[in-house]
Length: 64
Image 1: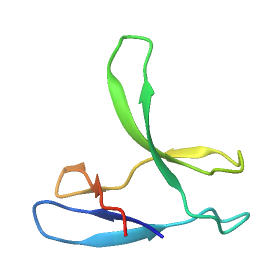
Image 2: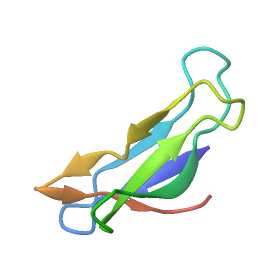
Image 3: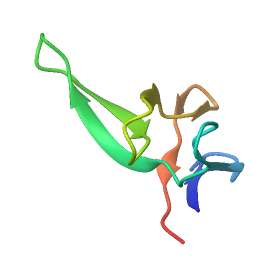
């Protein structure tokens, strides 16, 4: 399962798709202005979300 961990406090979360229960994949989305955003997306095309935040910053992906 994909795990996202906060580098400040150590909090972690597991992320899976609510429709198919597959592990979400870590990815990056490039916005129109050239900035990139860390996202989590379903490998079966059910959508994508902004990766979790904690302590005011994106939680980093920690593969298990």
